[in-house]
Structure formats: C-alpha cells, structure tokens
Length: 193
Image 1 (cartoon, one colour):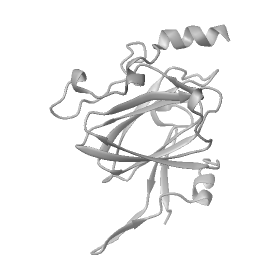
Image 2 (cartoon, helix red, strand yellow; image 1 turned 120 degrees about the horizontal axis):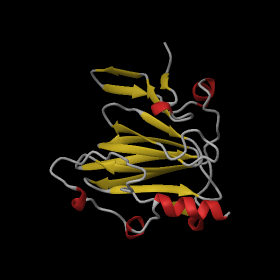
Image 3 (cartoon, rainbow, N blue to C red; image 1 turned 90 degrees about the vertical axis):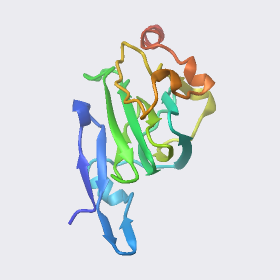
Image 4 (cartoon, rainbow, N blue to C red; image 1 turned 90 degrees about the horizontal axis):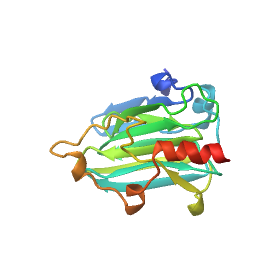
C-alpha cells in the first residue's frame, strides 16, 4: 500500500498537487508519514526543502496572497490544527493557466497537503476558531523579496468561503496585506521588466 496518494494538476493547473498521506490508526491514536523524499520524487515532486515554517492564527485571519519576486519557493503546506482554505494563483511566465487560481480545504482531520510550485501567489483563510499552519519551502526567506496581490481582487475572482458567522468586513489582515497590489498593477509592473 502506498504511503501517499497524489491528486495531480488540481483545477487543471499544471504542478498544483494535493497529497494525502496514508494514516494508520488504532486505539492509541494515529501515525502518518508527512514527508518522504523518495515517495514525493516518485510522484514527480522532486525538490529539496531548506526551511520549515509554522504559524498560528485565529478565525478570520487571511494571510496572502504572497509571492517571492527573485527567490521563488516551492511550498508544501499542511494544517496540524484547525481548518483553512488554502489558495494558489498561477503567476508563471508563459503558463497557459496564468492568473488562474485553485483552492482547497486543509485540516487536521483530512490531513491533506498542498504542493504549490515556484512562481505562484499563495494565501490562506482560517475557517476554524484557531489553526496551526506548517509549510516547507525550497529557498530561504528573503525579507526584501516579497510581493503580494489583493486577496479580493475582482480580476482574480478567488471565491473565499467565509468562516461561520463572519463577513468579508470581519476578516483580519496584516497592514501589509491590506495594501497589496491589484492584479492589474502586477501585470503592468511585469510588462515594464
């Protein structure tokens, strides 16, 4: 029996994959292997992760949509507590799905992981009262290399599910995320390069 199952090219976007590990449970609890280089490489996810990150957020926190400009990262993300709606937007030069997005619910219950390749914008919205979010990345953090897109840009049209009892005006964003670029501004800046 395989240790992981992989749903490839999610939403018709090449390279976006949902990974579900095999979970072995008994009366004591459960065990699952969340990452094994050989298993991932056999599924075409052949990259070297150099940094692990973890964040904690409360219900209604929206982080994103973030990307790295000169030092792009592949990301493998998962939730160890709570539930989030995780989104990736294709920003790859020449991609037939450029500007398209895909979202997936990640939770401690479903134990799904989301592989987001380099040159995607990424973000998530916390749906549960509290969530702990973990991600592996293939390049180190470069604080002066961050870019961002407006989470609610109508040209992207991301369909964020609102946490129970909340509206868009209740969402909690960082000051930085409140002033992210529009998709149109991003495209104009890209054309100037």
